[in-house]
Length: 125
Image (cartoon, rainbow, N blue to C red; front, side):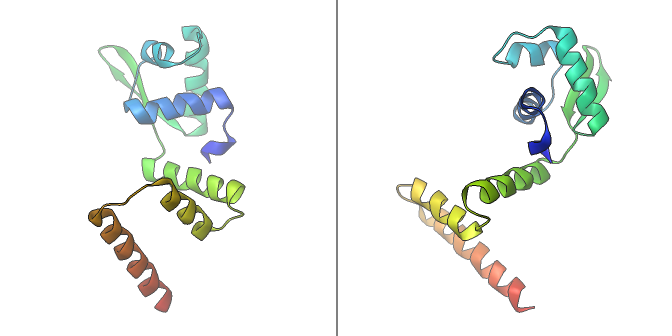
């Protein structure tokens, strides 16, 4: 879903996930490129129309926040990465992620075992 956005709009939504919410001026300030406030306002309006951003009135003016729950956005982004770089294989992606970590602590290993056990139980039903 988010992967279908133009790069600059995606950058704005990503920024809102990091900041939680922001005004047009705050978005302009946080972007790595200089854009006019009218250009950012237009992109936020498009993102709102597409259902990716919501706005509310505050004492600072309109404040914008992501409309798509963060978990849904994470799942969508991860699905795209797995599809693009791991030929759709979650095992390949998990293996690559595990290879990135030099050493997992006991708590992380316990969590991975719990998730694997849960996945196994779900497949037996």
